[in-house]
Length: 426
Image 1 (cartoon, rainbow, N blue to C red):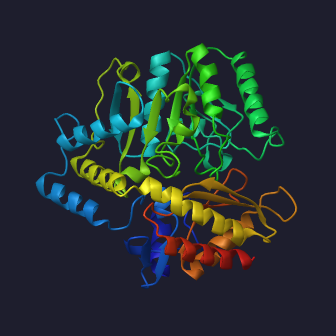
Image 2 (cartoon, rainbow, N blue to C red):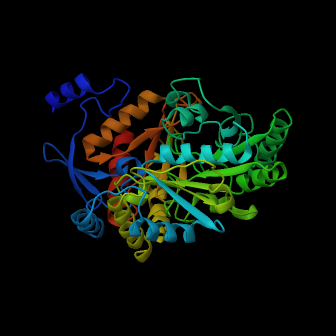
């Protein structure tokens, strides 16, 4: 393994992060488990950064990929593509957006990049509103709107970005308010901000901030924002790269917790729909999607193989009610995690919903981030046979728990026990 690590460092950029002091090579997986190069098995509570949404080596998906690869692997969007049209039809119907059009990309970064292109072209403006503590990808434009210093390596951007309060419920100047007062204060902040700007193209927001540590506002905040945005003609982009497809349990899309004022104008997705295959995309009503007045295609977006995977994965998800499983098993898991964290001085907050759970760690008795504790728990969990993630806008001091949506009750109990042992090791 050290040899592979040395080879990695010799040819891969320094800024491509690796987890663990002794980095892990994952060789194969099945269900909710993966194995490393030494043959050790781990319970996977991170799913390749929320990408292995249903299960590792899901037979329905691997069969669809193999069968499609045996026919044709690639053609591009210059040709009619039956799997792409079929998946687009299903996603358009599920999106909640009227007269929806779907454009496929290869990643969430590219999906958000496309959404920004659409919004700025439609509105004739390069001004964007984004949330503090947000993350939207690693392209030049998406880095430029990311509100998380740890993931924004440059201040240069083709866009003018202003950051809005509200994505983090328990930090910032409004944290001491109740939910209703918090929402009112954030709306007032938005109203004030718009009084100082020129024509704004869009607000982009994750219903639950992923890289930010699974933080979220009170339900209904983005609906309240939407009413303000509508008065100004500003578009709402819902970044569902991590929250989509039923992961939150209560809703199929994260925006539905804020749906009182209707669906977003633009919705972006990626990660889970491909269950590991490279699939992303944008959904928008036809008026917005069709606003581009120049030719455009995608070489790799909508690949027949990835579309076949997406179709099989979406069918499995719906037929097995994995959203309902995320609600039921996720509810059990978060209660077990809360119990495990009780009495651990470094735990500031356990938050989340469905199978999207965050644990924020601070220096005991303070609100100061504790990245060393987060790193220590990550290492201890791995030693115990559990893989989890990290995140957070305050020095990466939040643990991220996001197992595949087919997680069983017994696996949830096992994972919570392994996590408790890692937390107690602090």
